[in-house]
Image (tube, rainbow, N blue to C red; front, top):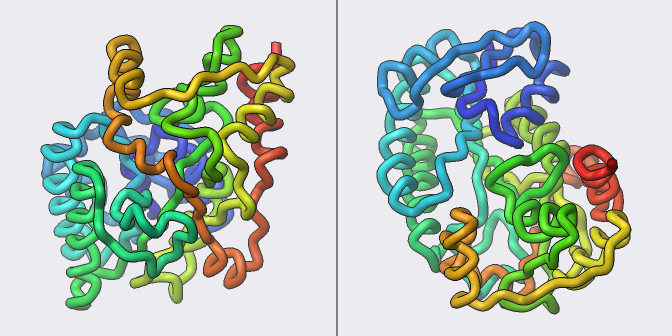
Amino acid sequence: MQTILGSGGAIGVELAKALTKYTDQIKLVSRNPQKVNDTDILLSANLLNKSDVNLAIKDSDIVYVTVGFEYNLKVWQNSWPAFMKDVINACIENNTKLVFFDNIYMYDKDFLANMTEETKINPPSKKGIVRTEVLNMIMDKVNSKELTALIARSADFYGPSIKKNCALTEIVFDPFSKNKKATWLASAKFKHSFTYTPDAGKATALLGNTDTAYNQIWHLPTAENPLTGKELIELIAKEMDIKPKFQVASKFLMKIIGIFVPMMRELPEMMYQYDRDYIFNSNKFTEHFDFKPTSYIDGVKEIVKTDYRK
């Protein structure tokens, strides 16, 4: 049995699709799980409840954590450490392997121009401090040989059919679809990597089903030579057949926009990711598994075709 905790989000859905290559015993766990594949087993659970977590993990060979708690600092501080403590303990008790889908919030902001699995950890934000705490919880148990786990780390992600927790959807695709200006953060002149969600799903499934991948950190496959904010906006506008009008938002403007768009009010502390090059290096994965990531052109074309073509 392979189990996805937080199965309803963009990554969970793509992972469920990809896991069918390896097993027909897939358990999807969330508050209101819905089948991705016909043979999926569904379990409704409150993942902030220890007994629900234990029940979800019982009899699982591998557990994938793709949970997307509300993008809110207080929610993260209250939820992530408690949730991961329960997950780790349940995995150890059931001799279950753990695959944790991670982001780059723990990396030192001065080393974002070529992020690798060895990049210095020095979280520059309060959300980054939370993610670092969770990472350390996992790796401490790995290092003590109590837990078999791996970290599957992604850059900011984008992809088809993402309804929430995706900045690129919120600030570019959706505004353009309503004939409004796009918004970019801090500066549009810097390069910014994005991981394509179908690639992330396939790669996470592959890692989970590769015994030698465990007890390591892996950057998920992400296209090389990322575009600048301006170039990406122009590419999206071209595919959506709209003029590439956009505004660059300061922290002050983001707070104003946040009055109307809740996710935006959480972004000011993350603006450092947009005022410098943000380049995600996934060579370890792509070379080891001979995997070619989806190009930005093809990724944008698929999103527009799937979600915005009338």
